[in-house]
Image 1 (cartoon, rainbow, N blue to C red):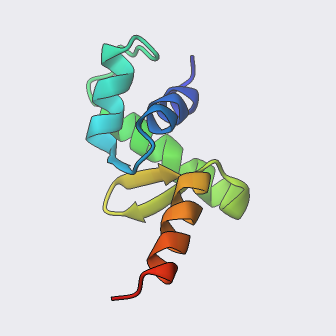
Image 2: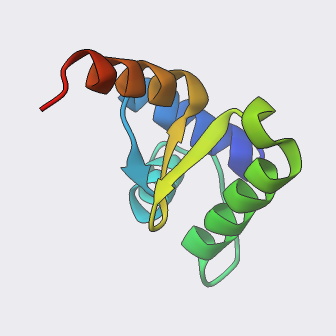
Length: 87
């Protein structure tokens, strides 16, 4: 499985935003993705950023902050909930 597909599976199963280190840890532990690289979290982070840059709003992912990602659908639901419950 490709790193982006693994990240998608992890985020979908979680249902909430995650830091790239947690996405990577879960993907590796669950056997969704394997790598011989020394910095797998940087690989996934770079791939996520490139996907978002390439596809924009059509990307499956959104970047929420420093190395934290969510699925577009989850992000849209969260933003809608925040708008309904202003503080």
